[in-house]
Length: 84
Image 1 (tube, rainbow, N blue to C red):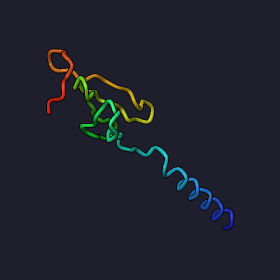
Image 2 (cartoon, rainbow, N blue to C red):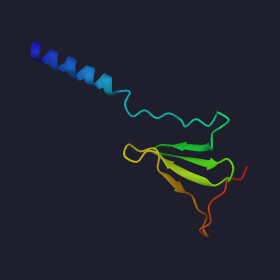
Image 3 (cartoon, rainbow, N blue to C red):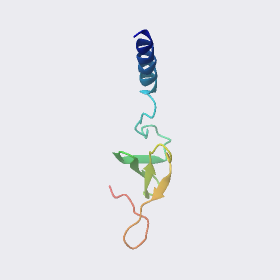
């Protein structure tokens, strides 16, 4: 019984210790020097646009590919531009 309590205690400590791992924070575009502004946030990715060129990108937020930018394109293959 004592071994079971020790094992459960260790498991609980490990579980609580890992609870903060892999937490997602919304990308910050509040400061003046930021190049990108966030449009949408989804599980696994978010959509941003370049403030100067207005070109839109999907940015991955996965465990193994966090931060990968993918250019969004229109049906004709031209870069998708953000329209305010």
